[in-house]
Image 1 (cartoon, one colour):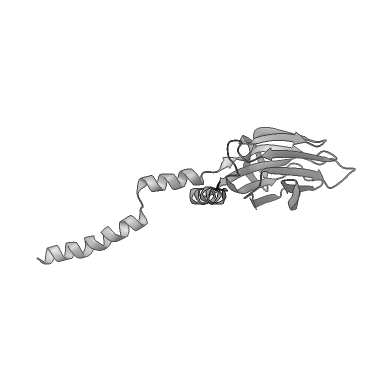
Image 2 (cartoon, rainbow, N blue to C red):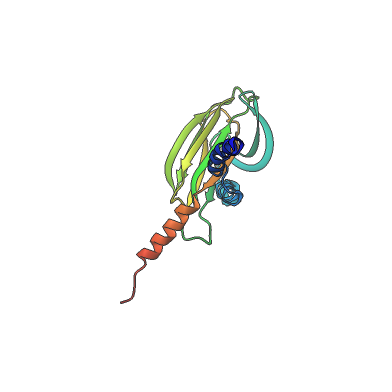
Length: 195
């Protein structure tokens, strides 16, 4: 009898706590799927500026650490930019919540002038940051209700050549599926009715 009480006193709390700590596998898989970021480079992107923008995977040393670069902007004496349309073609509105950027300048160009990295959201200036050799910058930008994102790198010197800015992180984070469902329901509610 005491054995049964002991077992039930141990098992009952475990039975209550386990489902809270470890939700069903299907729900966990759905959360992981919706939260998986998408590379900015998977969207439609175009280059602009006098400098160059290159999509090339390359391991680089920034701040005495190794990063795997996805693309780079090389402004030279002026500027280089990459503009991307992030609103999916088949959707009435953008499905992304934020853009996570990680970038820097390599350690082996210590005499390069610094570069101003300016972000534009739908053509309007947003975040701007100066980055110099060996420096790493990480940004998270809200892109909710944004259709186009531009990243522009401008050399801080008109007489000295600026090195490249290497981007090791350029990922779009999706909105929660509940937010997308709510916005679709709001659109349905706002649709005019013919009376």
